[in-house]
View: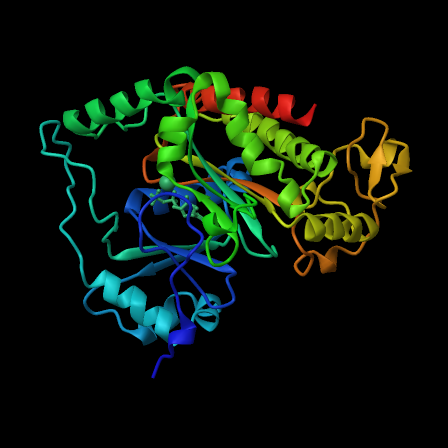
Length: 376
Ligand code: ADP
Ligand code: MN
């Protein structure tokens, strides 16, 4: 019989629908999702490699229906089947059996109301790399992109509601909002932390407290955190790492013809300052890797390197860099320092001939300006 200890709920989602799962090791993130999101992952993998690099690694899908049993899941993704527990498979199957009819045609006048249960019910789950795996205490931030949040198939009621949200939040001016975040030891008031020591910022934070005039302060709460020993120096290095990745996101989006509505950028970094510092030191001594989640900057080889007394290697601009040695087989086991991923493609598609996704790019460019300020 499955044990309670095999708990399968993914407890680190900072926004979005309930019902996300992960395997007991936490390497995989499993989310019931729409056919459109799967199609987008598949086509990115096959035809848009630069874009795919911005997304969490896509492992495959679990097709679930009334006939699905645990053995058929094992057959679908053999590598994944080894990872997920019996108990988890049972949870996924149970979820799949609550299937609701899906609307296939566009009906502008369809009745629409915000979901109350926040539980997506579908017969398909997507299996992704868990972007928050490999950290001691990951700080996680979901930034939802766009000034327009609805796709072409949205009923008028949904459009009106989302346009209202956009106009009342930073979506309107900046093209994004903070959808949710969690910060390890995010306050000295212990009564405000959850049992794992996190301060949780729910969706109201980004809707009601973060406004255009004080938007940087929202991100400062995420990155700079003396109570977890993420001091000014370390925080700025984190901001610079995110800045590099944000510029890459801008570059890739500007070169693609795609549209995504209500997608997010998922920011993760090691929220435990001591672990972060140790991780930076360890990776500096072993390998170079902005693509593997350590704090790094480009042009490592060409820059002169100095050591600060913490032991972190920094270049003449004060950027934390890696000291380039070739041990790439270690990469999987290395503790991670940070990651930035595009997520949530429920309303994403390729749109050849229509030019870049300016709606999402607006948010990315605003974030670049803010992170330039934070890194400085
Ligand atoms: P929804 O349609 O419910 O908004 P998302 O894809 O945005 O679905 O996921 C909801 C939440 O789950 C995100 O805010 C994030 O915290 C978490 N999440 C999503 N994808 C991943 C992933 N690959 N790794 C870790 N966490 C993830
Ligand atoms: Mn989402």
